[in-house]
Amino acid sequence: MANVTSTMVKELRERTGAGMMDCKKALVECEGDMDKAIDFLREKGLAAAAKKAGRIAAEGMVDAYVDPNGTGVVIEVNCETDFVANTDRFKELCRDFAKHVAVSAPANVDEMLNQPFYDDATKTVHDLIGEATASIGEKISIRRFARFVPADGMVDTYVHMGGRIGVMLEIKTSDITDEVKVMSHDLVMHIAAANPLFVCREEVPNDNLEKEREVLTQQALNEGKPEKIVERMVEGRIEKYYKEVCLLEQPFVKDPDISVKKMLNGKLDVVRFVRYERGEGLEKRHDDLAADIAAEQAKMKK
Image: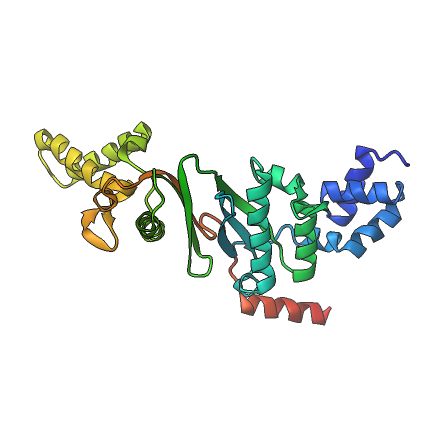
């Protein structure tokens, strides 16, 4: 077996644009022959996949899954276009990745990519992404995931609008009755709609509160309020802030006259939740048809 050095891996990566692990595997398979390794990557479609690595992938879907043992997963997988995101192939891929997280319990995305795929140990998750990218023709990436294992209760999930929003909730309860299940599902749908940031006011970091107080104080002063009543006004507005960001204090979406805490009526406790919205914080691709046509015309003139 040829000695594959880091310099050889670096050269192959520069020549093909393929991932480092793929380059190393190709060189090992081809006993250090650079040209054969290049052909190996092309045949596997991995070089083509790597060329797509610089593209913007802000579409895709958020999927949620609870396995038979009660472990829950919510995951965001991105692609480049909503057309691909709506295909059965892409949806199956997302569900496969969610199942992998449930079974293999990776600590983060990087660890997940290097794990043997739960249903086929001959491939890593990274290998599957490369194959899917090559066959689908778009950059595909796993952005984030969360995994909940309930200690004394259950996990519930909800996916809204075909994967635009995904919610996972862990509750604690002594008895998982039908009523509790209904309340839990009302709660995950509420989280999807109301977008709380914390479970309760005790979870709000002091830094958040101090920043909010500064903003509210300046707002009150700008409104011309006397300084002696500004502090009282700010504290009143902080109470309103709690009702906006804390799940238990929010007005329940199905009955805004009561809070979520009152709706739950002590029948279950919220342990934690996570809410993902597809593509939030990512740069979106803006297609410019006129520019694309002009570029193609320029190519034809050359």
